[in-house]
Image (cartoon, rainbow, N blue to C red; front, side):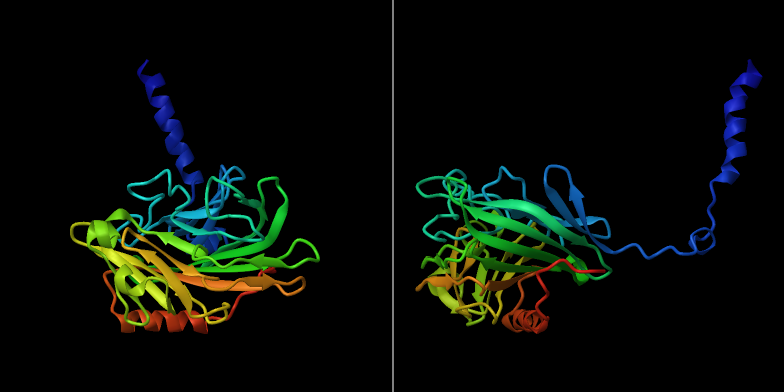
Length: 326
């Protein structure tokens, strides 16, 4: 009986030498470095952007959604800098999906709202490419902007890239290309709602958390900065009892109507208005190209620091919005 009990242990000790702990260059002579930044496809139509195993954000693009969006947006403290919905009106503002792309008037269809008259959906079609890297990771997706009957109003190609920075901070680059589905032009109507928006965490809001909004023009909070043109807008505030942080939303000079008027509220949201005062027509054969940047940061940065971050953003070359050979 004693011998039988020892046999499993003895067998495992005999097998131990088979599990090598040799250096990779001995057993894997062609091993490649593991990318530090990865975009990992997940079940239920999601993609997780990670740096060294830590999730920075997750792209949600399920076919049943009203629109794709990114949530959470992890700050250096590990907490999301954004939220889903308004803190006091989650139903009426259910379209506030953390970081999202939409517009209230594309060909007469409202893609901003979740319900009501003439409401459309931005429907994900497929992912064309996922790419990891040592310094950044990106994905390229195709979306159809469809009216309530399922008719395609606008075709979109969307590229999302994540670039980690020091101290848990990071950048997101959002590139989009829009074109009509046929030979007729599509009009993007005049409205304050669209093309990009951010719903901040409740504690960061000016009203709820005592946060701060600052623009490139030196304007602060809703009282000064409401719908005023700016190169960037920063929304910062408390994240924990001991830490502050926030997000800078950056408009690119290549975008039409730059510098964009920024819509914002002290209750915790901001957005760059593509067509606040006048419509924009997307002609066949002349795609509309847009680029926005977001800086997820610690602390409450001063204007000079944010301006330098914006300058670095605009100096980056525009990436192609087609599948790339690696």
